Image (tube, rainbow, N blue to C red; front, top):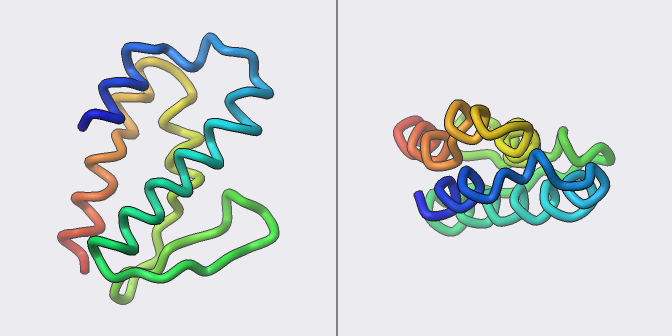
Length: 94
């Protein structure tokens, strides 16, 4: 919840696009994936395209980098594509 609130207050959608695409999305997606691995026992499946890299939890694949991209698109999307909702969904499905 703290990351969701921080992103909502900072309005990263107003930042220069290269900063969001090259720095924030990879960092936030990697963080979300690592949290899922540590707490849900998932494993990484790397791909050449970062948005396609996913974490396997149970019998499902989750796309943390794509979720981070949607989450940082706008202030409204920070709520609509909440990271904690994504994690809780994965937690219920594992």
